[in-house]
Structure formats: structure tokens, C-alpha cells
Amino acid sequence: MSSSAMQVIPLPFLDGNPNIRITNDHPPLISVIDVIMSVCKKSRNHASKILKRLPQDVSGNIGTFKFPGQRQRNTPVCTIKRIIVIMQHLPGKAVSKNRASIIDCLQRHSYNAEVMDMALQQCIQRKVRKRSSYGYIYVVQQECAQGTNVLKVGRTIHLHQRLLQYGSKCTVYYLHRVTTKLLSYVEIKVIQDLRKSFNNVQGKEWFEADIDQLVNRVSQNVTRCLQRMK
Image 1 (tube, helix red, strand yellow):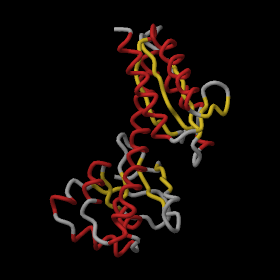
Image 2: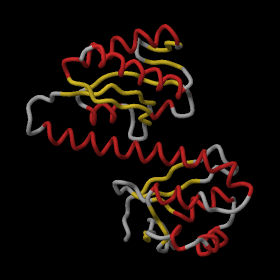
Image 3: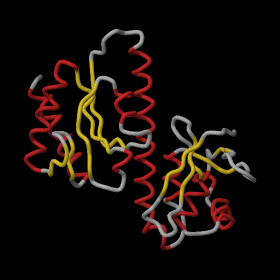
Image 4: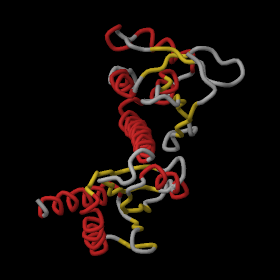
């Protein structure tokens, strides 16, 4: 399998700022060798040897992909689920230190790809239906805000268009579907609560906060609002 389209996930928290190549498939396929090199801090040749030594039940279900570029050859690729299994069996002290951070980074990217695909399908469906019966409460980080703790909390019924406004590489940290009748009410209640506990940095919907804490707070408030309206 080959294609002219690919993406690169940077890993700035690792020495040398390595990158992991992925395909534009849904779900994306990830370069196994890039992951092993990043986790184990080994050369490409050494990473290939490590992969070959893994048990068949661990390294099974791996395909190949030819990434674009000069002198590129078919390289092993697999899904995020298979990558996580492989990473649990990699040798070396550096693995335990880097494994969790890399898995978290790959899972976030895979989730983003699923969200964008879902949003695109919603956009296509709206061309057939004049009005949607539901929308979304979301927490995102704009492409230009990457590397900070600045997050945008909001609502939309046009998910695909809204995410594109935040940049093709925006990060989606939370997404919950809500009926249009309750969408505005839930957003108001969520933002009112956030402004009591987090630093409001821009407008009424931008906050600077620990990402996990803010996302958990939003999730709790959305659940609480929907339970009240039952």
C-alpha cells in the first residue's frame, strides 16, 4: 500500500525531537519502526531487529506502507491498538519512561482523526437534511495554541466547519452530543461554572487551566445538566 498523503506527529518531549509518521487512513496507520526508534532510542536498523524478535501474537496484524519521499521503501504500519500491544513488549529502561507519553500522544491524534471524520460525515448529511436535531459541546485547543494550556469551550451544530476554524491540527479534548433544544442551556451552565474556578483569558469561552482538570469539570457539568433536564 502506498500513498502521497501522510502526517507527522512530533514528540518534542523526547531528546532529539523525533517524529512518528502516520497515514491519512481512518483510522490512521502508524509507522511501527518510528515508534520503536522513539521509545527505545535506537537506530532504524536496530528497531527493525527488535520488531523481528517480538512474538508473532504481538507483532501480528501488521501491514506495510510506502511513505512519500526519496528512497522510501515499504515499512511496517499498524493501528493504534496494535501499537499499544507492541509497546508493552519492548525491551530497555527507556521504554518505561517514554511509553505512557507516546501512547497518550498517539491516542489523542487518533481520537482527533475520528472526530474530524465524524464531523465530515455530519456535514455531508446536513446537505440532505435542512436542520440537525443535535449539536456538540466541545473542548478544543487551537492549532496556534499548541504547547500551552489555553483551551476553548463552546457549542456548535456545524462541527466540521467549526473545527476547521481552529486549524487542521487543532486538538479535540472533549466532545459530547446534545440535542439542539438543550445545547445553549448546557453551554451557559458549563461556562458559568468554569469561570468560578479557572482563569478566563479571552472572551467568555477561553480558559487557561490544567487540561485534565478542565475537561473533567466540563464532563461533570454536562452530565449534571442533562440529568436535571430528564
